[in-house]
Image (cartoon, rainbow, N blue to C red; front, top):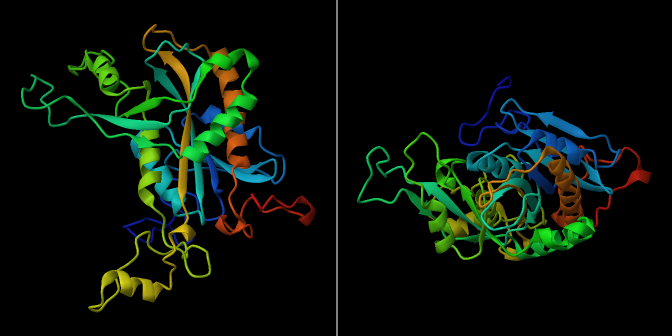
Amino acid sequence: MKARVQDANFPKTADGRVYHLGIRAGEVANRIITVGSVSRAEGIAKMLDTSPKLFSLYSERGFITITGCYKTVPVSIVCIGMGAPNADFFIREVRECVRGDMLVIRLGSCGCLTDLPVGSLVLPTSSIACTRNVDFNFASGDPWEVPYRLSKPVSADPDLHKALQDAIELTRPPSLENLVVSKAVNASTDSFYSSQGRQTSFQDHNASLIDHLKAAVPGLTTLEMETFSIFHLAASWGGVMQSSSGVNPPLATSPVVPALSGKSSGTSAQMEGLNVSLDISSRPVIKAAAAQMVFASRSSQDFISPEKVNELEKWSGKGVLEALCNFNISPERLHPLCGSVWEASEPSKGLRASL
């Protein structure tokens, strides 16, 4: 950390940079691809327009943000590494840097529990969380606790999921028609090993875990580590109320509406003091979907080749870009163009602000 942080509750520097991603307002767009691999982020970035010049920031915490335009539409690629904690940093800190709506598509690798071959692409409609129960006695067994817990499912945004499905149909090679699955359930886990049923030198009590998962969750197809957190946060956020002028409150304000002093009823006093609209339709939203590339088959034990990875990332990455940039966001629900890193250097290079 090189700059002084202003607030321990939601750490930011004096110029508005968030603590882990290192970005500030105007450096991340409303439309975002999130990936775990640096090379994947760099490969997708090569598909972006040559103008305006790409913005790239590698934070001290290992997050990479690349922002530019795809067919003149502002888009960001954010590499977050692996796991739910990093997904949490990503969603919460980007939300503090972007005014208006957020569209987030996760493009990541996964393991497959069905007979789909490696190199397939799965677009899950929902995700559950499978987590290691830390109250279970893994050393000697435990008759009172289960070793793993399953959550209720949370859904992808249906409109963004459909847009992703349509875009992938246009970008996938004709020979791969049967290798795209758009109706499936994902399980996101808190471990690549124990809660995905892999056998290691640890006593993880997971020999029957995959069979249990398949029996308990109809349509379960993939295992990975991030999608549930992204879907959950998108569905849980609900939107910060906007001001009567139709834009978000200043980005420096708290992400939670503060309680005002006095004995007035909290909700009515806050609404009066902040001059916000009660119209739910005016609130910004977070829409999330996912595209999961099958790198590992848990039934055949096959693992994808580097050559097939390159091919898969290329056409699926293009499909995700197409889905994001063709998904309509009304102009008043976009982050301001002025002062952003995607601002066109000349008026003749104007962006498609209507999208």
